[in-house]
Length: 373
Ligand code: IPM
Ligand code: MN
Picture (cartoon, rainbow, N blue to C red):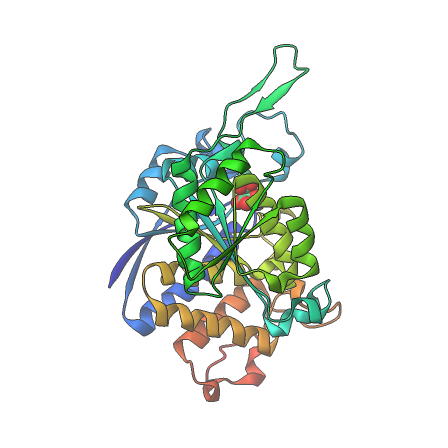
């Protein structure tokens, strides 16, 4: 089959890691007889530099026409260090979510046994954790009216939700739970916020249509604590935009590395796939960034296109790279040999193309030569 994939490398390490994800996709295309047509587009600080706009119109057009979008990262130190700058890279991503109505962000939190030792939490606590976070992505405080008063001494951000905005992401969360451990936990602040009370009412009503799924509610402050204390109690976590943003990052700690977590942002017509990690400007251009999260984003993209065997092939290749320790510095001890970003990408592509372990030439792997005899 032929697919068009919009590729937005973005800022910082974004271009390096998406290059590796494309290597993996090329290996999939070759092995499973598909054609992936990449259409590159600009967004973020790089787009501001070139066009003055963090989201040029043609980027929106390319994304709308594509079957799926692969995105790298957004943000640069210049903007982090100066919050007063009016035109900001992040506005590009927020506007794209809005334009494409990407209303649901899904972050799977999975534990790779090989990485348990990297996690700051105890093995007994995190082993076998398997959570999917469903975050509402196109409404709430992110997109409400915001203003600074004339005298600059006060400001506000409005958080508002409609039943419809709550319902569409809720249905996706329940459907996902039906295929998993059949539990949804709604994370909110219903003891304080009116929007949270609307969420509870709406989600409880929808829950009745999914009789095989258990529903419970948790206040967000408690949830932040429970996720690190006892993560195994969760299956699907459902939350509004801002709480979902924070909870997703808290949950990332469980996996032992933010460098291997991917996420998808889904709408009715479009879907975008990206690593959880940001643009990591200090590592830019050094060939040291971990490409696995971007490569796993490509696997999620294939899953979305219905290419399940192909997605599995990427997943297996990533697991093999972790098993063999062909990974970047962030997953290694101080004096251990680490592979470069590009070498990890080469290994993954090689493994996808030659999935027999017997084909691996282990002595060559560390030499950075082809891993295939
Ligand atoms: C994310 C990011 C964004 C968000 C930023 C970059 C605006 O943290 O994708 O989770 O807060 O949504
Ligand atoms: Mn975030």
